[in-house]
Length: 166
Image 1 (tube, rainbow, N blue to C red):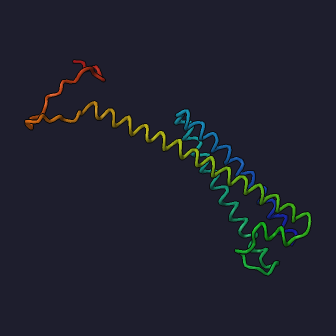
Image 2 (image 1 turned 120 degrees about the horizontal axis):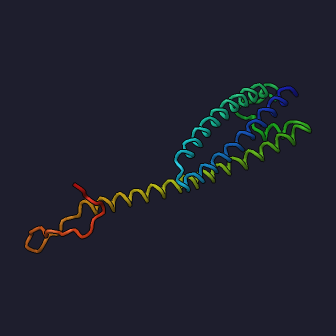
Image 3 (image 1 turned 135 degrees about the vertical axis):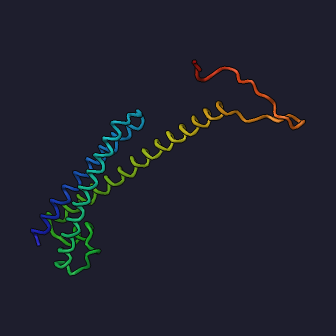
């Protein structure tokens, strides 16, 4: 059983490192969203996708190890959580798994927060773009003004947004 716990500890260490890298990527992503640096943002998205795939593979390993530990604890695989393991093992494993649980909770909360901020920045950018397109459309295609007689008032456009040549 100690070998399984050691293997699980190693996988959790890699998961914590992976989530830390993901937080860094998301924070850089936020900076590039704000700066409107599309090439750098695209690179961040690729790095994020790669890290998520790596984390998925690590999660599969963790689940496999947890399933194997379930036999030792005579419990169902779904019940083998970090809290359960830390409560069911002796030192030093108990402290090790409590520490990983704490780190993972903190990292996942940070990821939620940064993702929420990134989402808000993207939505704000999209709203600004929509308003800009609406403004340009209104300038290029003014709405007709109807006089009380029902005749459309001919509008004279003043100023130009684009210089027309030739």
